[in-house]
Length: 131
Image 1 (cartoon, helix red, strand yellow):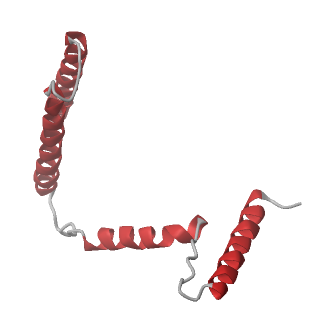
Image 2: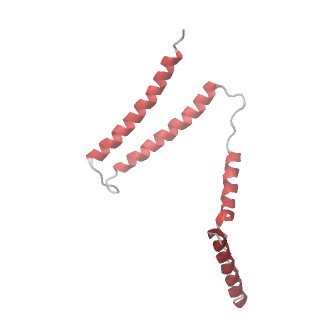
Image 3: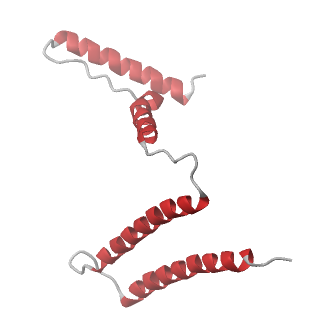
């Protein structure tokens, strides 16, 4: 009994054979072999690995304070950028919205900021407790 993968492989092989036969008749065209499945992902995987390898490496002797500064700056910058993108939704030439929808977004953003600041406040409160 043939699996779906086997059938797909057979169909791809038939398509390649048909393309080769067609190209033998028409010498002006080059064979276009389309690879699918796991092999088509190999170039993307290689690019991803190269990107990871080319990123700035974390200093080996980085302190907790240095890491907080590095990551805090990056995260805050990204969050502010995303919030500005939400602000782009106010363009009435491109979007339609109701005041209720705007209020929901506003509440969600305020709640997220309050929750985040609460975690910082809790961390300082619990860190100050000692027996």
